[in-house]
Amino acid sequence: MADTPPNRKPRKSPVSDPHNRIAFLRLQQGLSQEDMVRLTGIPDRTYRRIEAGGTHNPGIRHLTNIAYVLGFDPAESLGEICKADWLEWQVFHEGGPKEPPSYEEYPNRFIDPDTYGVR
Image (cartoon, rainbow, N blue to C red):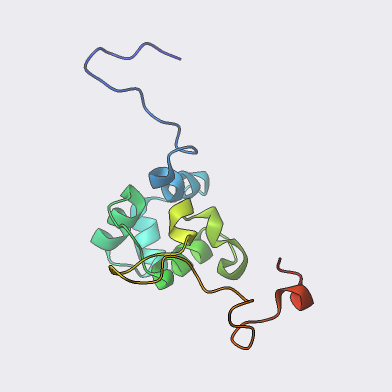
């Protein structure tokens, strides 16, 4: 690794820095931010905030459009463009459920995981 000037932090690899995952994939495709804005239909400022990690919880429709433009099937691979914590259960307010309901607790509300092999 090259020496880093004393007043500068070493840069993280784009692959290991989740805030840069979308940027890394975009650059692999040879696309600019302007291309992404045009192709996704997401407003410029919103797209740049998502890519920079300035959006704590980006909308699923934004992530879906980004996934399509980057060549992923969103139904199968949102994990390719998301930060890991974007795919985790989210507590939206104090007193809200701390974890998702389980199949065992509510068997009539969910697809049987054993039938569809999702366990």
